[in-house]
Structures are given as structure tokens and as C-alpha cells.
Length: 271
Length: 238
Image (cartoon, rainbow over all chains, first blue to last red; front, side, top):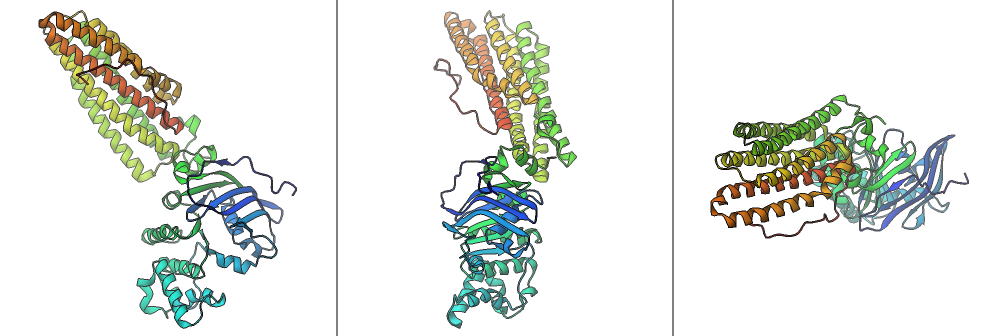
């Protein structure tokens, strides 16, 4: 593993045109599942207050890389992660970093909405409670309301906060889960195909929400929808067979990709 | 403009077929526009009013083709959401078809003026107009070849040589002015020739536009360097 941190010179980087500081800096990231190498020397700077899309065919490593950013791969026994990932210059793979606290800073939203089997209120209040972010009922109420408002769900649920979270529609559940992630004041929000189970209207609501959240958060979204990546992101990273092939402003990746593999993938050609 | 050998085939075959159809339609438009320019010049040289009338009639076909190209592109954008190369090819086709439709209009205007010219005594300067016309037709031919083959060298060549057309035009403009100043009876036919020359100069500009679009479609970048310009001229017809 001597070359674990060696720069991957094969990646094609376009000049960055986002005027935001780097929030997440990955260098030489390699992941193995048992003997199988899933990621090869990923070097990637992700900017704050922007949306970065990870695209690529199934099995290309984009979700694996996403899961490195909040150390979700720790939960897989056979997974081994090498290299460096820094959030605001703090190495997240250091032994001293508590993954539970890290995951409060780096929230995650999954493909299938996964509300807790609790009330709408308790779903959102859960995080602030266990992390001690609110003192007293009034403050907790305020956090729940603000989070639901930021997630664009407040108006639809304000009068039934005591009802079960899983009684909501799929799109509402996904926004509830986003409210739950926001409630603990994260800095980075990871989304793994957050709209793949939603209809176009619910998808549009989530996309609008993503665009609003961009004001305050660093968002990273994995999506199989080229149109969605194009609509919501400012930067796009194309992964292929565990390599980061091309990374640049979304507009350039979708109008003028430089690598043949990127072009073949996004235009639906045989690779 | 669709070269599967270079770009590879779409997984959805119908998508590739639709892009090929689009390029074929634009190429057909191009062929028609070029023949209209060529025949309108022939009609001047041979004083063939029937041929000129035929050119005028052909303009309807090029207009219909343009509407067809636009329909195809709107359909592709709505149903296929083209990206990267495919997107650039669609956008280039949309704009190239508009340029070619204008070339058709200019050819029609040349043909109409030719019919008027054929009513009076021939002017010696028709030869100069023919030379300029052949030059412009050559540029159009070359740039359409570049469109079909996707080889940008031809397109860049045309783009760089547009000032040849401008210089021809400027020279012809001076000759015509001198000629008309010497003999007031030549003002009528001279003005027709002047406008014919101006139309040809504009066809050259459209060929240059097409060259830029071919370059954009193939490379994804614009031809931005300042193009060499001929001597500036006070031109009342522009």
C-alpha cells in the first residue's frame, strides 16, 4: 500500500469556477472490500456552499466514496479505507475522531426515506436531544420548527407533529429525513440518490430544497439521473471502475466532457 | 456531422438514427443552398432567365427543409435530452440550418436581380461578379464538406479566408462605382450587380458562421481569435 497516497494523474481536472473555499479535501483515497479494490487514489476537493454531483455507472465507486466522507464504511467489517479526507483541515480518519460526532457534522440522506418509527416531531428532535443541542422544551420546539421549515415541510405537517413519520408520503418522508439531518447543524450533507424513489413533483421539491440548502451547506449528491445532476449541481465528478475520471464545473462536464469515458456515459453510448 | 466511427453508437439505436437523420437533413439543405448559389451565378454568366427562375422556385424547398430540421431538433431536445457531443451537434444543426436558409434567400435575391439584368445590355463587370461568386461557392462547398466529415481543418480554412471574399467585394464595389460614375445609363444594372456582390459577400459570412459552428460542434470550444479583416470601406449597401 506504499502508493496509497500517490496522486492519481489520470484524473482530468477542469479549472474550478466556484468562488467558495474547499470544505472537503480528499487525497489518495483507496478503499478495499476484502481483497477487492473499490477506489483507486481519489484526489478531490469539494467546495463549500455548493452542490457537487457524483455520477458514474453502478459499481464505479461513487457511493463508496460518498460513504468515506462520514466514515460509513467503518460499519462494514471487510472495508478498509486508506488516504486522507480532511473537512476544514481536520483529518476525519484520525483515531481521535468520534464517528458519531462526525456524522452529526456530515449528515446523510439515503435512496429510500428512512424515518424512525416515531412521531414527526421526535424524528427531528432525536438528533438535537442525543447531542444535547437544545436545552428545554421551548428550544427543542424551535429547532424542530426551523428544521422542518428549512426542509420545506413545516406547512404540511405543522398541525400533526405527533403523527408517525412513516405516515407521510414518500416525498414528505424524504424531506422529513432531510429536516432530521439539518436539525443537528451539519456542515456537509451527503445524499445517495435521494429522489430515485420519488415522482417528478416530489423530485422537483427536493431539488428546489437542495438549491436552497446550498446557501448554507456543502452538499454532495450521488445520482443516476444525468438530468438531475445537471439541474442541481455546480460541480460534477465522473467515476468509472473505481477511478475519478473527470471533475469540473457541471456545465462543462455536460456540454464538453474531455474524457471519452465521460462522454460515452452521459450520452448513453457503449463504453 | 455524425460519425459513429469516432463517437461510438448509442445504446438506444433510435437516438443514433435520429441524429444521423438530422445531419442528413442539414446536409441536404447545404447541397440545395450550394446549388442555388452555383446556378444563380451560372444564370448571370449565361444570361439564363429560366435557370434564375428555377433558383427562385427552389427557395421554397429550402424553407420547408429548415422547418423540418427545426421540428427534428425540438423533438430530439424534448425526447432524448442530448448532452455533450449530441447536444452540440443539435445546437449547431439548428444554427447552421438558419444560416443555410438565409443563403437560400440571398441566392433567390441574386436570381431575381439576374432576371432584371438579362433585360438590358450585358455588363463587362459580370465577369468579376462570377469570380467572386465562384470563390464564395467554393467556401460554402468546403465548409459543408467539413460539416459532413467532422474534419475541422476545412472549416478553419474557410474561417481564415473570409477576408478574400471581403477583398473581392471591395474591389468590385470600387469598379462598379467608377463604372456608374462614368455612365449614368449603367446606374440601373450597376446597382443590381452591386447588390448581387453584396449578397455574395453575405453568403461568405454565413459560410464563416457555419465554419464556427462546425468547430464548436466538433471541439466544444469557440473559434475566438480575431479573424484577419480586409481593408475597411465605407459601404452604403451594408
